[in-house]
Length: 559
Ligand code: NOJ
Image (cartoon, rainbow, N blue to C red):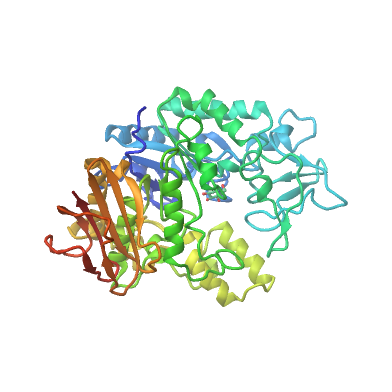
């Protein structure tokens, strides 16, 4: 079996915020093409492109109105073809975002579907009659309000798990499935190398449509009836048979609510579904009563337990994806490290070490490699994300949280933390655009930018580059078996990876304190070689007892 996707490092581009080539304030495809050499230099293998399809941008491209056209803001199909060819020329692969749980309400299918009950496209979506003048179920939508929208023309409701401009597709309909497979084939025939599939474990709904348990928002939780639904494996196997099996692809399914047991089924070696999944367990830690908007302190032991469960659980069957951040999550350093001046770079390197030495395919989110941080806009009017704005309205206007508390939550967890423009230089707007950016640039761009890290051999950029290089040179990093050390330690995350006669020892201090690492007695160390570290380290230092510095990370090869 060809395992290139196990040996790859993926870099996610959020095109709207990556690089603007024409000064309209919005990142675009030509902007990406101009930066391919930068990515090649970093050493990554695959680019995951967040959606670039035609879209009215209710949810920044995750609401697609034409799957086979390019969003005007981003350029033309010729620009796309050029970007793809230039990427391939450099040995970089392109993984497209595939949003097929829902479309935009402006997609031609939905325009037809809502026109009349007997329209041939009606059944491409999920329509139900109300119950006693109320929606068919009590489910809440992910972006606030009911998950059902009443449509006056035909006097029925349609389902939308996300915004009302993102109606859910009806996967029970074989004609719809066939059209989706044809569309996927179109892109693969063009030469794209795979797909990241948006909330793909939502596509099969429980056809009984029961009410859900009421939660803090006052709506019912419908997720048990649409996450990992009854026909999900059948649909994915069909998709594999009809499309994926004919190409050499990389596939990753975004799967909120997926457990390790689910992931074994989605990614198992003989299952013929997907290569890997994105689970949410580690990014959901520390969620409070109102979810991410009221965050609580999280514990390192919880994080270690989650990672270890996934490392163990997919050790024989399936494969892990590894990520700290993406366009829906805050910046990794601010969330899991420490973004104060003294520790920003150190903790960023530590987090990179901890993640890239685990077993699985690592994902780098744009800007992570230059140490970008969260943003804290003072005014809610500077935010652009539909989820953030809707949550503010629902929670503050309904007096569930105060304005101040909500802004605190937003500063920590809003998706816009990851969506401020990539910081290229110390010029105006961080060199992202010569125009007015669609969302403000983080004020710290003079201190944190790509130009600066490229000039400093000790920078976080070159640290990432080295981690990627090490992966290419040492199969133990890809294939070694994982063992957690010091399970109960609240400061140090230490583990080993074993492969043939060798062992990797990974030691990461997640705090600004100086805890002491003691090598467990069962780990033998006749010979050691320091592979990477984020402080200057004496290669000869005895590693049986190490007094760690704040956010220190070290990796040794033991023989
Ligand atoms: C997950 C995507 O990552 C997110 O950005 C989007 O809002 C939802 N799915 C809906 O497509």
